[in-house]
Length: 49
Image 1 (cartoon, helix red, strand yellow):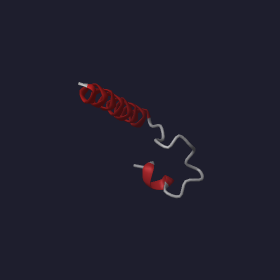
Image 2 (cartoon, rainbow, N blue to C red):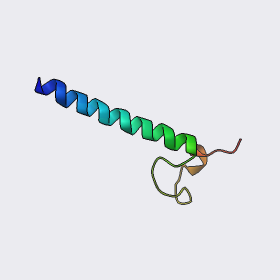
Image 3 (cartoon, rainbow, N blue to C red):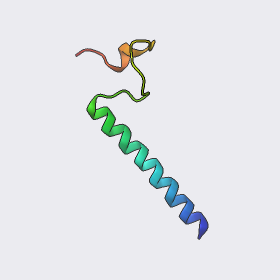
Image 4 (spheres, rainbow, N blue to C red):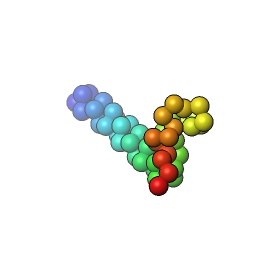
């Protein structure tokens, strides 16, 4: 029974993290939390269309 509870909590945490990443992506926010000016791959994340 304990394994089911712990597994459910972990699954909920992973789902919350993925949902937050999707929301941030739709808002155009960076996933790393810092600015892109000093990032070496900043041009590949936010390429101009």
